[in-house]
Image (cartoon, rainbow, N blue to C red):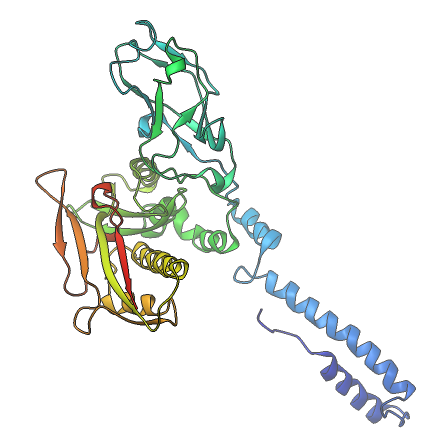
Length: 408
């Protein structure tokens, strides 16, 4: 907190003593005297008062206001704080789907369509527990279809309803002929990260500080705020004139590891509102380039199997965090990775060799000619494109993206 007016109790006491000695006939002001005792009692109260005045004064400026005082600024600017919201998904975002492994929905229901009622529970753990979602409206699974996307909302509030890819695999619906065989399946094809807690003071203050400029619309501030106000967005990169005059592209960095298609659609709707007539914005995912690592660690002494497991787990975690926390366009620096590994345990003597600390670092780039990826071995720092983000490789075929071996 900035100190604007504060005087502590000792400063106040000194000023009071000087004033008494200079302007009154009282001369006995030594420690323990009645005059000194009274002045010290008053100075303590005045010191608390100065502190309270400082706090109140700081809260009267946007830069220092917090909590309800920051909300008062929001009322003046007609900008409310974003409240706590549940994670949700629409059917058009094509994420949560009901499907059958073979045949179609008619196959498992005597040739008839299936009616999923509103409120049907989808969950991450059997028995309608774990993270749970409920269908927001009734949906018909046509007898001739084998896949149907649905709209649902998390039962848990805030970010507690956010969930990773492929985790919602249970449901409580049994209103079809073959329900004893559990042939009606469900899953979510992408992460859901739209649930959010009450907006923090820092985020709210940023929006308020830029609200006047943003209210003009059709400028960079209004576009950025429109994108950042969408739940699930960590940051955006604006690329002016990317496709020529009258265009701009917006590259999204999501909170989740892989940017969901639904998030891109939601941001597109938001920025369309604040873009000028004749300007064509396009919101897109970053180029998501995977990365896997193989490292051999040399220790100072022989350790137990449990200790080795802990070190391996910690190295995998710290390298995953390093890679996944790289921003769009941020380089992967091998020396930074080495430092991260060496800090895991004091028992780590070295990794790899002096010329090659990591046995293998692979980069997986999306092929322009197919749906597959091309794997390239990295021999130096990797500098991505301005719209490229390096993340841990998620292709299940490659196995564990970070492999650690230990030698004593």
